[in-house]
Length: 238
Image 1: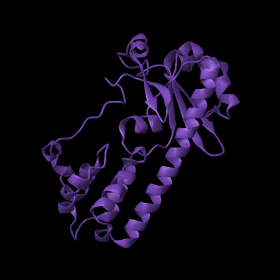
Image 2: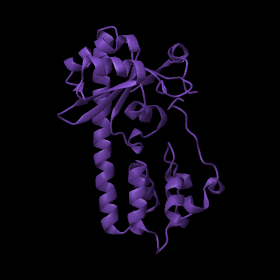
Image 3: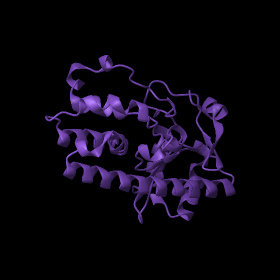
Protein backbone atom coordinates (compact mmCIF):
# COMPACT_ATOMS: atom_id res chain seq x y z
CA UNK A 1 0.00 0.00 0.00
CA UNK A 2 1.36 3.39 -0.94
CA UNK A 3 0.51 6.44 1.19
CA UNK A 4 0.46 8.52 -1.99
CA UNK A 5 -3.03 7.32 -2.81
CA UNK A 6 -6.12 9.27 -1.81
CA UNK A 7 -9.33 7.40 -1.24
CA UNK A 8 -12.17 9.88 -1.48
CA UNK A 9 -15.62 9.45 -0.02
CA UNK A 10 -17.87 10.63 -2.84
CA UNK A 11 -21.20 10.30 -1.09
CA UNK A 12 -22.56 10.64 2.40
CA UNK A 13 -24.26 7.29 1.75
CA UNK A 14 -20.82 5.71 2.21
CA UNK A 15 -21.07 6.55 5.91
CA UNK A 16 -22.40 4.08 8.39
CA UNK A 17 -25.54 5.21 10.26
CA UNK A 18 -23.52 5.96 13.40
CA UNK A 19 -21.38 8.42 11.39
CA UNK A 20 -24.34 10.32 9.93
CA UNK A 21 -24.21 13.13 12.44
CA UNK A 22 -23.50 16.79 11.65
CA UNK A 23 -20.02 16.67 13.20
CA UNK A 24 -18.85 13.75 11.04
CA UNK A 25 -20.48 15.18 7.93
CA UNK A 26 -18.81 18.53 8.50
CA UNK A 27 -15.40 16.87 8.82
CA UNK A 28 -15.98 14.88 5.63
CA UNK A 29 -16.89 18.08 3.81
CA UNK A 30 -13.55 19.55 4.95
CA UNK A 31 -11.51 16.43 4.09
CA UNK A 32 -10.00 17.76 0.86
CA UNK A 33 -6.47 18.12 -0.45
CA UNK A 34 -7.27 21.59 -1.77
CA UNK A 35 -9.37 24.41 -0.40
CA UNK A 36 -12.09 25.02 -2.98
CA UNK A 37 -13.90 28.33 -2.34
CA UNK A 38 -16.74 27.41 -4.68
CA UNK A 39 -17.54 24.35 -2.54
CA UNK A 40 -17.66 26.12 0.79
CA UNK A 41 -21.43 26.49 0.50
CA UNK A 42 -21.61 22.73 1.02
CA UNK A 43 -20.33 23.31 4.54
CA UNK A 44 -22.90 25.87 5.69
CA UNK A 45 -25.81 23.41 6.10
CA UNK A 46 -23.89 21.58 8.82
CA UNK A 47 -23.89 24.60 11.11
CA UNK A 48 -26.66 24.06 13.64
CA UNK A 49 -27.37 25.37 17.07
CA UNK A 50 -26.98 21.87 18.49
CA UNK A 51 -23.59 21.24 16.82
CA UNK A 52 -21.40 19.53 19.41
CA UNK A 53 -18.19 21.56 19.13
CA UNK A 54 -16.35 19.58 21.80
CA UNK A 55 -17.02 16.34 19.93
CA UNK A 56 -16.20 17.93 16.58
CA UNK A 57 -12.81 19.20 17.73
CA UNK A 58 -12.02 15.93 19.53
CA UNK A 59 -12.69 13.84 16.41
CA UNK A 60 -10.81 16.36 14.23
CA UNK A 61 -7.78 16.17 16.51
CA UNK A 62 -7.85 12.36 16.56
CA UNK A 63 -7.84 12.32 12.75
CA UNK A 64 -5.34 15.20 12.46
CA UNK A 65 -7.89 17.33 10.65
CA UNK A 66 -7.91 20.48 12.74
CA UNK A 67 -5.84 22.52 10.22
CA UNK A 68 -8.18 21.57 7.38
CA UNK A 69 -11.25 22.21 9.56
CA UNK A 70 -9.98 25.64 10.60
CA UNK A 71 -9.11 26.85 7.11
CA UNK A 72 -12.43 25.70 5.67
CA UNK A 73 -14.36 27.36 8.49
CA UNK A 74 -12.38 30.54 7.82
CA UNK A 75 -13.67 30.56 4.25
CA UNK A 76 -17.26 29.99 5.29
CA UNK A 77 -17.22 32.70 7.94
CA UNK A 78 -15.82 32.41 11.42
CA UNK A 79 -18.72 34.40 12.86
CA UNK A 80 -20.62 31.12 13.01
CA UNK A 81 -18.00 29.54 15.26
CA UNK A 82 -18.23 30.20 19.02
CA UNK A 83 -15.29 32.40 20.03
CA UNK A 84 -13.62 29.99 22.51
CA UNK A 85 -13.61 27.19 19.94
CA UNK A 86 -12.44 29.49 17.15
CA UNK A 87 -9.49 30.67 19.27
CA UNK A 88 -8.60 27.05 20.09
CA UNK A 89 -8.79 25.98 16.44
CA UNK A 90 -6.71 28.95 15.27
CA UNK A 91 -4.02 28.37 17.89
CA UNK A 92 -3.82 24.66 17.08
CA UNK A 93 -3.78 25.19 13.30
CA UNK A 94 -1.06 27.81 13.44
CA UNK A 95 1.03 25.66 15.77
CA UNK A 96 0.64 22.67 13.44
CA UNK A 97 1.71 24.81 10.47
CA UNK A 98 4.87 25.91 12.28
CA UNK A 99 5.71 22.31 13.18
CA UNK A 100 5.03 21.14 9.63
CA UNK A 101 7.46 23.71 8.25
CA UNK A 102 10.08 22.68 10.79
CA UNK A 103 9.60 18.96 10.08
CA UNK A 104 9.90 19.63 6.35
CA UNK A 105 13.19 21.46 6.85
CA UNK A 106 14.41 18.67 9.13
CA UNK A 107 13.43 16.02 6.58
CA UNK A 108 15.43 17.79 3.89
CA UNK A 109 18.41 18.09 6.23
CA UNK A 110 18.38 14.31 6.81
CA UNK A 111 17.91 13.53 3.12
CA UNK A 112 20.81 15.81 2.18
CA UNK A 113 23.06 14.09 4.72
CA UNK A 114 22.19 10.65 3.37
CA UNK A 115 22.70 11.80 -0.22
CA UNK A 116 26.18 13.11 0.57
CA UNK A 117 27.07 9.69 1.99
CA UNK A 118 25.54 7.77 -0.91
CA UNK A 119 22.65 6.18 1.00
CA UNK A 120 19.34 6.14 -0.83
CA UNK A 121 16.11 6.42 1.18
CA UNK A 122 12.50 7.24 0.31
CA UNK A 123 10.37 9.58 2.45
CA UNK A 124 7.28 7.77 3.69
CA UNK A 125 4.27 9.81 4.81
CA UNK A 126 4.81 12.88 6.99
CA UNK A 127 5.43 16.38 5.59
CA UNK A 128 6.73 15.14 2.23
CA UNK A 129 3.34 13.50 1.59
CA UNK A 130 1.64 16.77 2.51
CA UNK A 131 3.79 18.76 0.08
CA UNK A 132 3.16 16.21 -2.67
CA UNK A 133 -0.62 15.93 -2.32
CA UNK A 134 -1.81 19.23 -0.92
CA UNK A 135 -1.96 22.60 -2.59
CA UNK A 136 -1.47 24.02 0.90
CA UNK A 137 0.67 21.44 2.78
CA UNK A 138 -0.26 22.90 6.16
CA UNK A 139 -3.75 21.40 5.68
CA UNK A 140 -2.26 18.02 6.59
CA UNK A 141 -0.90 17.80 10.09
CA UNK A 142 2.43 16.00 10.47
CA UNK A 143 3.70 14.83 13.84
CA UNK A 144 6.71 12.68 13.00
CA UNK A 145 8.98 11.46 10.18
CA UNK A 146 9.20 8.14 8.34
CA UNK A 147 11.74 6.83 5.86
CA UNK A 148 11.82 3.72 3.70
CA UNK A 149 15.32 2.20 3.40
CA UNK A 150 17.11 -0.96 2.34
CA UNK A 151 17.59 -3.48 5.12
CA UNK A 152 21.27 -3.98 4.34
CA UNK A 153 21.92 -0.27 4.96
CA UNK A 154 20.40 -0.10 8.45
CA UNK A 155 23.68 -0.14 10.39
CA UNK A 156 25.09 2.69 8.31
CA UNK A 157 21.79 4.58 8.53
CA UNK A 158 21.90 4.40 12.32
CA UNK A 159 25.41 5.84 12.24
CA UNK A 160 24.39 8.65 9.88
CA UNK A 161 21.36 9.52 11.98
CA UNK A 162 23.61 9.76 15.01
CA UNK A 163 25.68 12.33 13.14
CA UNK A 164 22.61 14.58 12.76
CA UNK A 165 21.38 14.24 16.32
CA UNK A 166 19.16 11.15 16.34
CA UNK A 167 19.49 8.16 18.65
CA UNK A 168 17.57 4.87 19.07
CA UNK A 169 14.24 5.44 20.76
CA UNK A 170 14.56 2.22 22.80
CA UNK A 171 17.31 0.34 24.58
CA UNK A 172 19.26 -1.74 22.08
CA UNK A 173 21.33 -4.88 22.26
CA UNK A 174 22.88 -7.25 19.72
CA UNK A 175 20.24 -9.92 20.37
CA UNK A 176 17.39 -7.39 20.16
CA UNK A 177 18.74 -5.89 16.94
CA UNK A 178 19.14 -9.35 15.41
CA UNK A 179 15.56 -10.27 16.31
CA UNK A 180 14.23 -6.95 14.99
CA UNK A 181 15.99 -7.36 11.64
CA UNK A 182 14.66 -10.90 11.34
CA UNK A 183 11.12 -10.49 12.62
CA UNK A 184 10.44 -6.75 12.54
CA UNK A 185 10.21 -4.13 9.83
CA UNK A 186 11.51 -0.89 11.32
CA UNK A 187 13.76 0.91 13.78
CA UNK A 188 12.54 3.87 15.82
CA UNK A 189 14.79 6.88 16.42
CA UNK A 190 14.24 10.19 18.15
CA UNK A 191 15.79 13.59 18.65
CA UNK A 192 15.52 15.15 22.08
CA UNK A 193 15.65 18.90 21.36
CA UNK A 194 13.25 19.57 19.82
CA UNK A 195 11.37 16.31 20.27
CA UNK A 196 11.09 14.51 16.89
CA UNK A 197 10.28 10.84 16.28
CA UNK A 198 11.70 9.15 13.20
CA UNK A 199 10.89 5.64 11.99
CA UNK A 200 13.03 3.90 9.38
CA UNK A 201 11.24 1.03 7.65
CA UNK A 202 12.76 -1.69 5.46
CA UNK A 203 9.69 -3.87 4.98
CA UNK A 204 6.00 -3.27 4.26
CA UNK A 205 4.16 -4.83 6.06
CA UNK A 206 6.01 -6.60 8.94
CA UNK A 207 7.13 -10.19 8.20
CA UNK A 208 4.57 -11.74 10.57
CA UNK A 209 1.89 -10.87 8.00
CA UNK A 210 1.16 -13.67 5.57
CA UNK A 211 2.11 -11.62 2.54
CA UNK A 212 4.55 -8.75 2.00
CA UNK A 213 5.16 -6.41 -0.89
CA UNK A 214 7.90 -6.95 -3.47
CA UNK A 215 10.57 -4.60 -2.12
CA UNK A 216 12.59 -4.65 -5.31
CA UNK A 217 9.51 -3.59 -7.23
CA UNK A 218 8.86 -0.74 -4.79
CA UNK A 219 12.33 0.63 -5.37
CA UNK A 220 12.20 0.13 -9.15
CA UNK A 221 8.87 1.92 -9.43
CA UNK A 222 9.76 4.79 -7.13
CA UNK A 223 10.03 8.11 -8.87
CA UNK A 224 11.60 11.51 -8.49
CA UNK A 225 9.35 14.55 -8.12
CA UNK A 226 10.03 18.26 -7.77
CA UNK A 227 9.15 19.63 -4.31
CA UNK A 228 10.12 23.03 -2.94
CA UNK A 229 12.59 23.61 -5.75
CA UNK A 230 14.41 20.32 -5.21
CA UNK A 231 14.16 16.69 -6.32
CA UNK A 232 12.81 14.08 -3.92
CA UNK A 233 12.31 10.35 -4.50
CA UNK A 234 8.91 9.00 -3.43
CA UNK A 235 6.99 5.74 -3.77
CA UNK A 236 4.95 5.37 -6.94
CA UNK A 237 1.44 6.89 -6.70
CA UNK A 238 -0.11 3.43 -7.10
